[in-house]
Amino acid sequence: MTTPPTTPTPEPEARAHLVTGALQAALAYTLYVTSRQGAWPATEAAVFVPLFLLMALAPLGFYLASAAPLRRRVAIALGVSAVALAIGAYHGLTVSGLAASGPTPGPFREDDYLMPTFVLGLALMIAVPAAAVAREGRVRYEAWFDALLHNTLLLAQGALLTGLFWLVMFSAAALFKLVRLPFLGELIERGEFWIPATALVFSYGVSLAVTQRALARFLFDRLTQLCGWIYPLAGALGVAFVASWLFQGIEPLLQTRRAAFLLLWFAVLSVLLVNASSRGGLDEPRYPRWLRRALSTGLLVLLPMVAVALYALGLRINQYGWTVDRLWGLFVAIVIAVFALGYALNALAEWAGRAERCLVPVTNAVAAGVAVVGILSLLSGAIDPRRVSVNDQVRRLMSDSGDEQDLIRYLAREGGVFGRRALQALASDDPVFGGVPAARQALARDALSDADTRRERQSAMLRGLPVFPAGAVAPPALLEALAREGGVGSCESSTCLIWRLPPEVLGADAYAVLSRQEKGARGNGGSRIWRADERGEWAVRGTLPGQGLDARCQSQPGAAALFDAVREGRVDAVPPPQRDLSAGGLRFPVQRWGRADGCD
Image 1 (cartoon, rainbow, N blue to C red):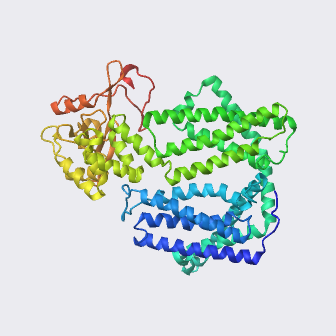
Image 2: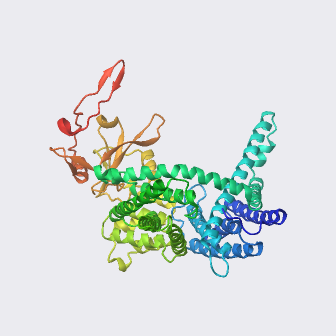
């Protein structure tokens, strides 16, 4: 690990870091207090979000530029502050607040500022070291990668010191509490103490890592050795996993519905192990030549992994459309594909007689550039995942390609200002849509309204629904529970009803809201069964599927058939096709697989 030409002196470094920590603590405490009190700027996303990004990322930019002189570090921190404010302002202006909930709803959610902070922080981890080591407009790969590694250890050392500090404080507070002196525990819980204490201790831990580089070099050597031991194991397991596809195919993997995430996670881990064990391809790994060649060739399995991950992601997009998570997943897959392709070319070059790891540095540099440009594009609005996903989900909604309640709910919760505008257009029957059904307009208006208005609207709708069988009455407490739980959707007396189920099903006074539409009142093809407990509190006790079984035990759409049968009084209770076992005062339910003799 290369040591910078000059080692910073301890006292100026400590002062600079403590001043940075103090400024961060002051801004963090201000945001904390206003958020707790529901005061400005916490009430205005366009102000709070950029200030939060500034608070979190400006000090980070200063810390990550540790390879540069102090004056350049300040300049880099100011540049990071400008980027954080710009991106924060964009996100603050484009959040919707429609899904805010809780005793004191705010105009935005935690994810609205935590996600861009974390992702932009990752981009800074890559870009700031390059700015810190740049000389005459050029960045040497070795200097950049060493700065990248050093920053990782620097932040880890700061986090370790902070963790030890709080371990001591909580342990001491527990000791004082034993002798009935709770003052220390009460002090720890006060924001005016724990916020500045955390920021200052972390900043001091970073300053120690900057001035005392021997520890960082020691940690790097140990990390290299540990990764050197684990990397061959990961490579062998990756090859074995891909080889298993030759015998059982990829269908079992796709059925997990998490194939893309799992494959990309393993690929990311493999890339990290490769670079940690060889200092980004600069050092020769401590393996025999045959093992080095085998490991390099083994990286070829990253290509089929990324290909299957993209295929799995494509299946989900084709089924359910674009979402914010899927767009970010595609971005991660593209970055990993750059690594996989570069490492595959490196393996071919080695077999052709070129030097080992010859293309690893170039691959890492290209992938880093793609990652930074992609993150800035996705965060700055050039390719806003919320806008793209809202446009796609609206298209699916208008073409009846999915459940409209789920689609409306997505627009409200994940679409930001773009989703709010789409809902407003749907609610007002904008001509651009060519006519919006009344039920869909009602769903859009419901999503745009606040929680109290939605609950009142649901209550009014539920009170207007007919109750079957004839003479049955829906208890007021049940209607309140249904309105409070939500998800009943937009119903009319001609398309929905409240049904008191036969007592043989779930006991006396069990109810369900039925819809004649196949998607059901809740949009999932079924209905929930509600029943009160001994204290009179209503809760879900079971479900009615939206499909039934025909004489051949094949699933058939059944919502309309059940709805009509309930209205006409033609519903019978069918005994179970098999009996359970009883022994020793206990009942043993028998579960069978297969569809014979009763379609179990």
